[in-house]
Amino acid sequence: MQTQEQKEFIQNAIEQVKLHGILKYLPDGKLTHAPFSLSPYTMTESVFEEMAELTAPFSELMIRVSRSPDFLAHHLEPIAAIDTFLKMLLDCRSREVTQNRQLLVQRNDFFIANEKHYTDKQNSHPAEKTPEGAVMRQVELNTVSASFPFLITRLNQLHKNLFEQNKLPEVIQNNPLDAVVDAFAHAVQNYGISDSVMLVVVQPDEKNIFDQLGLEQHMWVKYKIATVRKTLTEIHTDGKLRQGHLVVDDKTVAVTYYRAGYTPDDFPAQEAFKGRQLIEASSTIQVPDLAMQLSGMKKIQQVLTKQEYLSDFVSEEISGRFLQTFAKMHTLDEIINTPEGDVSAAEWLSKHPDDYVLKPQREGGGNNYFGSDILKLLPVIKKEEQKAYILMEKIQAVPHYSLQVVNGQAETLNCVSEIGRFGICFAENGEVKNNRDAGYLVRTKAINVNEGGVCAGFACLNTIAGFDSE
Image (cartoon, rainbow, N blue to C red; front, side):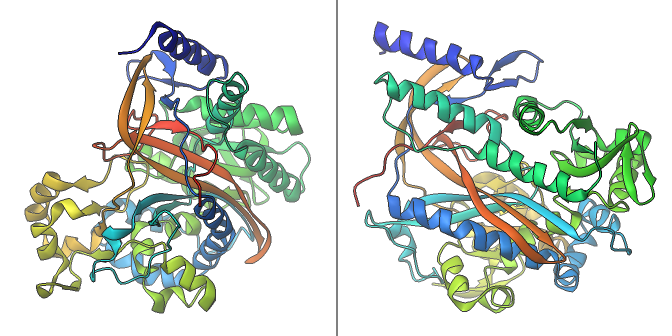
């Protein structure tokens, strides 16, 4: 039962969130605040620093993977034979190399998990231990549409204001918005054509538009760089090539920033496919380019959990640190070692569905299978389709209580929090010129919720408070 004082605090926070532009649209078109937490997440300083230190090496890994076309083709083309969306992306590849500059804006997501869950002999990687007896486990690295730099920066400011009023604990300073906008501005300026713009590739009915508009507005205020918003279909209709440059609405596009293009729904007709091909045929700096988007596929994540592949791209020291963060991942047709002997991953999954997450080659949330849904899906998957799915050990995150505010209603729930680190990396001809960690994102959700999308209503935006004692 909330006291009157607590109710007033929550209601005031809701109005402040709206004032800060932390907003989203509901499916019925109504405007509301984005889900947020009033319980900043606490973690140990050593884990916080380790996550930040690994951002730049992970970004460099993705640059190297994206510039290895034979590696990508070897692992993805067999899946494309049965996955029409992946095949379509591969078909967008241009034989002519038109872009020698890459800008990666990524977000690397982790859970803090219970150590004892990973002392089982099934676990093939040593744990990155913290003084609190926990391990950090990578969920995924997002190479396309790494969202929320604007919303999380604004929430950090709000939480800071509430701390100064003695209503919340102190939170760690966080401003990925400036870092991302600075990187975009540098790329536009590096392109070398005055009055060029940034093209934002969007979905037709974007629910997370305020995170995008906030970033675009900051680009204009800070650098006077204009942005143009278009769907892939509109790019086909309104765009053209002029001496190798992408021109949209008669404006030269220096940077193309994808906040769409990672789901089949973004390609409703052939015109959208042609829009993506037009971008690929131009010299615009893509964020990310197609090779980088392909490098973020679940299959590539799974392959890179194997040291024999990972060591081709990073040093032995970095490889060891990466491996300490990886959860176990398999293909369904893979033979794995279990306490019951060597069995196929699919057979093992059918007996232990609650211990794993089944993932198709999709981004954007809401695509994964858990528990009973896995058991329903497994008999339907044909043998030749098994390679299109990735089996990932379910990460048992450390629970905590959090005051969650969704659609004007507040409730204290037993939750888990996913911590993302934003990374920015600019490279020319594969040579890294600038590579940095750019801040954090926390998404807190009820412990019984599987998916983690904020604008989909599954999770709440959050910040990080002062550290737990070491």
